[in-house]
Length: 349
Image 1 (cartoon, helix red, strand yellow):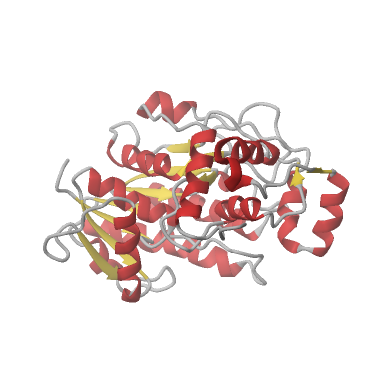
Image 2 (tube, rainbow, N blue to C red):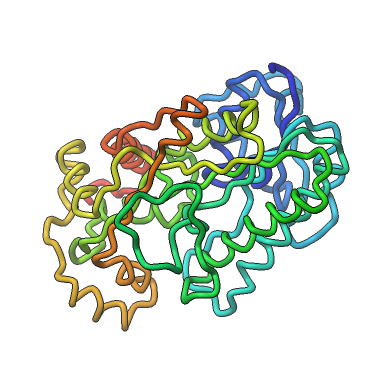
């Protein structure tokens, strides 16, 4: 309903800013949390780059609040008067943390802080941004498609990020069951998120596209990973927020086909022409990737994926909510062109 107030946590992030765009385009009023009001200008600049018109009185359609996932301060004020909350904020590492609690504590405690504040404020529904990380790890890779019924086993050998997303989502569902009151919860579980980049803070998935465009990788590991467009992730958040059947449900956000890294590189070369001239064509042997991972910790996650092709189903979001994701070639091209437009791919590169 137009004019309702929605809180988006982590509005300066890639998914968060696209959720704000979708809400503003849908006629909602938006409040967003940032860790510092210094980010106010950055968020507005990204929204304007994304096509939002923020003219009019300051705060009329968009307002800011300061809140941190590791502190109680600010959350009561942030949720006051809100009809819905999209809890998008969560730590996402650029590297491997020394202590896994650097990720687990803010993810889990932050989710519980937001849910408690939302419950106490009479919010109708919270949509939590989780991840496929909470669905498809810590078990043998299955031949069948992964669905929303699957859960990662955090007691197995999984990365700190995977563990943080799993424990945070489990804690959120437990809270709703035990002490949520009338508050409803829906969860969106995206795979690797690509799409139009509006700022310079890049996610791990976007970094891959940038490195391919710069020719900053020696070759292409033969691994696969699910992709989804950030605009489709934002749309799914809004559907999960308002659809009568979405309360109490989780939804995988993934395109119709899970590509390999060589598939992604081929799409870049086919769609971008000369702008993709540095994208490598050589496919690296698996043994070479495994050896490189012993030296470079950032490649360990890649090495783990070798030979493990995960099939992921988007049937539930499509059938229950009428969601329709963009094809991979579109979202890959749009990601690359946005990086070029932002000047992040040097001319002559």
